[in-house]
Amino acid sequence: MTIYIDPPTWPGHGRMWSHLISDVSYDELHTFAARLAVPRRAFERDHYDIPAQRYAEVVAAGAVQVSSREVVRLLHAAGLRRPKGRHQARDSRGS
Image 1: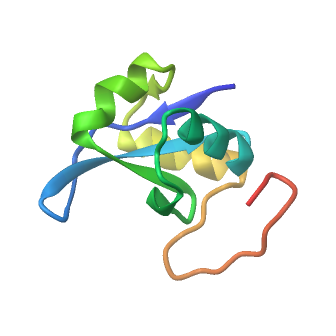
Image 2: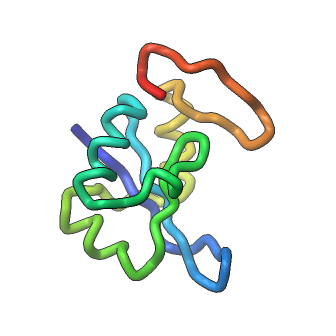
């Protein structure tokens, strides 16, 4: 299992955020996030939004640090990218 996280460079709601992804399945991603008690409401289309203050904790738990560009590349390569504004049916890789 490999889970990836980009640096907390995305602003929103007065904080900076990272994106947590899997390049295998949404199920793998949900399992990892649940282990860290990341609320399911933090899941948005194809990633979890992780606040900057939790970044080090998530990396210590095993997430691999990659660039934001690499996050997008990994999602596309795995067929897991769900761009904003597009609705895709659930598939065998998880929900």
